[in-house]
Image (cartoon, rainbow, N blue to C red):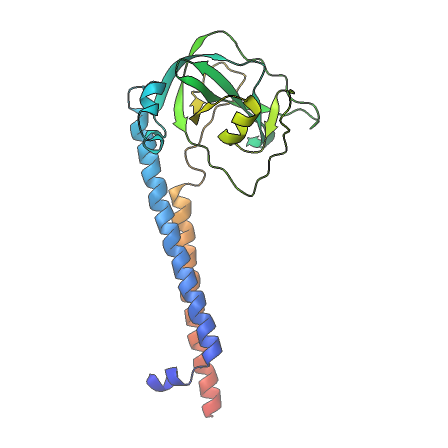
Length: 240
């Protein structure tokens, strides 16, 4: 065995070793992601059974601990100055998610009213009707994730609505010229509504992460087996 190992080519062995280590690391990472997604789904399920809190209770706690918590509040929607979150897909259709500033006793909170279809032209925005009367709203607490690689194209001017590329609360504050609460409320689905509210707490299910982990482990094993067989055959030819 030692003779076999001592005769292995250094470069090929090093490359194979690094590839196997990387693939096993990726497999372990996918397993960790599966555990995280499972925990998140469990937290969502438990939160759904919790009594609704109000905005003040959310603000008194750590926002991360309040994610997915059911919340209710009274508010007045700004029916004129709202935001359209671009490039959102529903059942293969392109559209926008509608982000509406809500005036409440606790401050201005951004509520995601849901998805609406885009028009046939990018230059024509959909005609959206928003009730501006004071009403009670209910939803769940969400903290938007921002991608530093995405650049906003909307100009800070007096034209509304604004089309945004992502839910960046700092950017929203600049456009709205008013401080907003540090989270977003995803409004609950309604039987009759012009907005589609089909929220997904996780983008990829834990089962998919497990499948990817198995693939990485099998690739690592396959690479190791192929390398060993190839080197043994090469040594046998050299010996002959």
